[in-house]
Amino acid sequence: MPDAEVAAPRSPYDVLDRYYQAMLDKSADDLADLYAVDAVHEFPFSVPGFPPSFEGREAVRAGYRASWSASPVRVEEIRRIAVHQTTDPEVIVAEQVVLGTVPATGAAFGVPGLLVLRVHGGRISRVRDYIDTSGLGSART
Image (cartoon, rainbow, N blue to C red; front, side, top):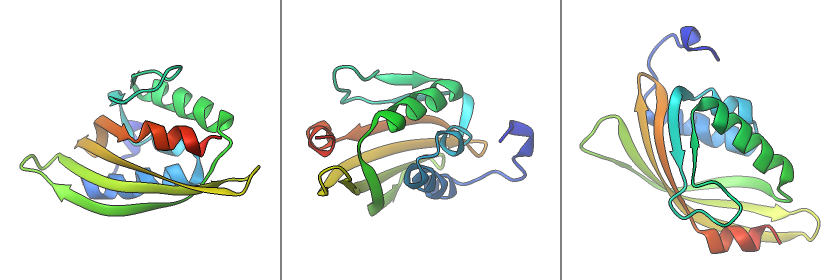
């Protein structure tokens, strides 16, 4: 969605809802459209072969498109454990567990994580995505 199409600023909570839906839909376009052009998505607990960050909306789009097309997993639910408001109205912290299956084996998985989400002007400007990399690795096998 081009920047001009944003009718009203979206709250961090609204953006989080849309973020989760894009993840469930495996829609790199819907996800990337939530980001500002110059946004940064960081993975502080990055794994070998995966970049420590995506710099810019188009890097988010390309990175998630490549990751999801190569992934053998199906995400079925993103369980919200809690969403914490901070003293900064642009920032929320979401505790979550991503639940799904590996279709080839039928194995179920749950990967806990935290998102620190900054939304400025209705768009994501920065994400720090703390994901349990050991859980992520077992989900892919």
